[in-house]
Length: 241
View 1 (cartoon, rainbow, N blue to C red):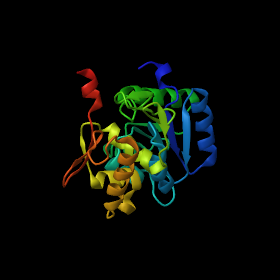
View 2: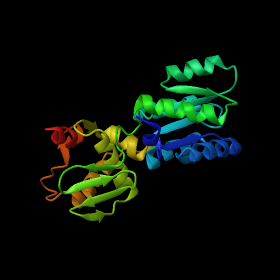
View 3: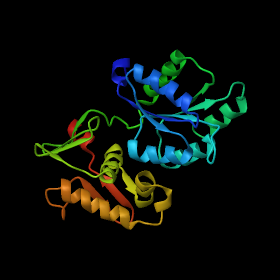
């Protein structure tokens, strides 16, 4: 993965200090990244669902939920790469962050060059959080999705999806060929507060089928695994064959 292919990757920056967020944003945007901001843990979890970032820069010292708590909650629902922002000399924080599933850490204060270098290194190593969900994905002759532009094309025409529908489709396609349980989809798309609302998944699966499937009653893209969850057809495997 060369540096050119890293451009337009989406970075979620989580820090309660606005000056720090502004500093990081300016330097990342200068290198061609798209930056999404969050100033506390709750905002970070919401942005994770809404923006589907490719990497998260996560500060440890924040009010309400600290960085460790946020990281634990992220890791329950998502494998997006996370770089922790730690205070100088706090080795215990770095070790704890790595043990909880962080991919790397940067010690404050850091230079713009170090920041960009660490971000690129983690993206190269992990190949991005969305598992290749970038650019134009051709599912078959009917359906193609441009994940960079957030456009869904069906039989040559753009299909408009609501934000929740798009997030649901993204996570299904990100795991194409694998069954995702109702609970996993609820956590990824709606958040923890909806864990006891399985009807949301059924309702929005139905919405997607109505918009994408030729025959919603006999779906070819979004398949039901009874009693378990849903699976998007493994279009990658079919394309290779």
